[in-house]
Length: 249
Image (cartoon, rainbow, N blue to C red; front, side, top):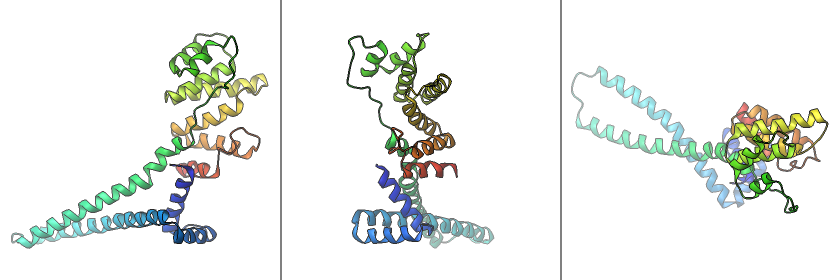
């Protein structure tokens, strides 16, 4: 799923909630007139929303019927049995549609937000005659070895620490990745350098997001977005920033 798809789904949800700004509402409604795939998404969203609302009504009916049966003395007739069967079937359909709504319009955005923006860090294609062992391991995808080499080198460079963080990202060890990227940023500040500064900021934002630290991720993404010269300026797009901000509020 790409960023534009997530953004359109959010706008459809805002349109249904009646909170979409007028100019965006007009543009989206015009697009719905000509985009069959988007109309299908719109219809699914409305159907799922109705299912959620109907489920609330069904719960109310169920509670009322329970109270009514408690007041009755005579046994429930066969009509009551049929009524229960109908209600049970309807409840099953409603719950399935509700689950579909939650999966399609909540989980995909949460789970895919990281995947939609994560990109594997690649070393330059140029290889020196004496390429360091850590870089060879990185090119080979030997992620644990990349980290091991860093941890056994008492004179590790900023480059080595960044690569260890990138390897940790591949291993989905986001806490270790955060540690390495923050070390890169701290060393740059203390040593008045900028080695892998942009890269560390971008991947740190991703790692923090993966850990659920949306405030930390948002601060970095906004910083990257505001710097037009940042290597990852275009990747920190407005849609992504808005999605992260929504996780905070």
